[in-house]
Image 1 (tube, rainbow, N blue to C red):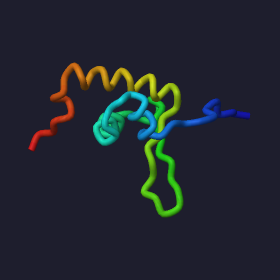
Image 2: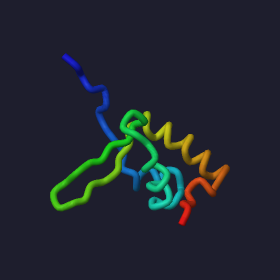
Image 3: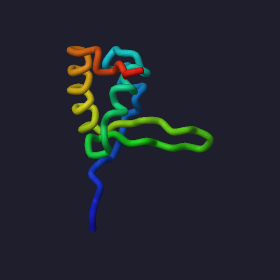
Length: 79
């Protein structure tokens, strides 16, 4: 029997607060991540959903943040 080892996730808002960055900016970066990177969507009644990350996802997101801080043009999209 497969047992999922993830026992909790942290919302993107909470991670943004921990990183001391803007939540919208962080969400734009995290949207690049895949489920294998540790990001999931948590759906609730009447909500569109909330992005959340596993501990592994938070560690991966730190790398994404570092890349985007080193090169802010990564978020700029062509018009």
